[in-house]
Each structure stands twice: as structure tokens, then as C-alpha cells.
Image (tube, rainbow, N blue to C red; front, side, top):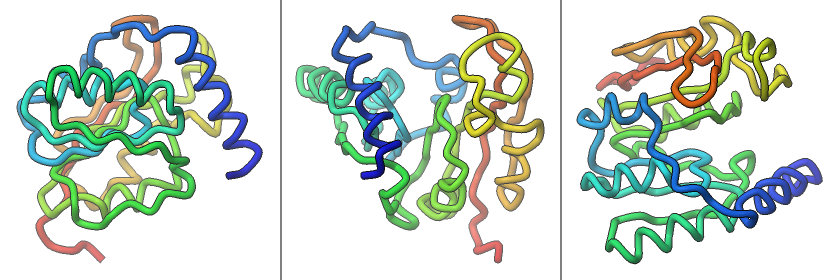
Length: 194
């Protein structure tokens, strides 16, 4: 694990060790949850607010995150409620994703551009990706400010250009705190695109 990944892991472990709030699932996920089912991957899922929501609605969810403390909360809830949830502690910069495995992938407020191709390949043909991440405009209202973690306008749509874009939106939302985000629901084609 790189020094940067260790620093990132340490920061998230401390955050989750300080206490985990029982946050509701992301609004964009709730809006499209009826389209998602089967085996789902939650990328950088933290303490599992979205994974738990999907598992409670009958999905079999794999949640991946770098922080053990967050994942242990998700596992405790899943165990208590007998939900189908499998937690994987891993640094996503080093984790190879299985190909053509998931019916859906969700990615909320986490941006790792090097994962775009792997996420696309990890979906079964016809599978859905539900993605929400911060836009570059976020610098004007708060965290994060590092451009490495901020999408350019239209970047998400371009990254999934071979997918059928079912829903796409960019702008300012104030669901919890004001934030500039890009939101996308897209479907992998039934046939290979390259």
C-alpha cells in the first residue's frame, strides 16, 4: 500500500472510529433503487448507508472500502438484519474488479478516474451504473477542493460514452449540504462496444 493510501486509510479509520451516524441512503439512489437489483457493487461504500439500503430491498451487495471501521458497521447491521452483504476492505487503486459480474454498480461521492474502465467491464451486459460525484464547481462552496477529486463538466458522460445514458444531471444540490455534483444512470450495452 502506498504512503498516500495509508494516509487516506488512516484518515477514514479515525473518522469512522469517532462515531458513525445512521445516515439515510443517497437521494439519487433512492430515486432509482427500483431499477437496481441482483448482485450490486458499492464502490468506496464507507459505513454502508447505500449498501444497507439496497440489501434491505433484496439485493446481494458487495461493498468495498479502504476503512475497516466503516465496513465493520455495515457488517454488524447486515448480520443483525440477516442481509446479503459482503464487505471487502481494499485500496481501490490496487483492487482488480471481476469482469461481467455485477447487475449494477453504485459509486457515490468518490472519484477515481482510473476505475472508469474497470467499472464498465465489471458490469454484466445490460447492467446499470449509478454514479454521483463532485463537480469542479464544488471548489466555490466547500470540500473537496482538490481537482483530482472533482469532475469537469461533461466528464462523466464522456467517460461512459459507450453506455446508454438513462439519466444525467449536473448542478447544485442542497439535499444535505450545498454541493455541485454530476449524477448519472447508465446501462452497459448488450454487445461489446470496442
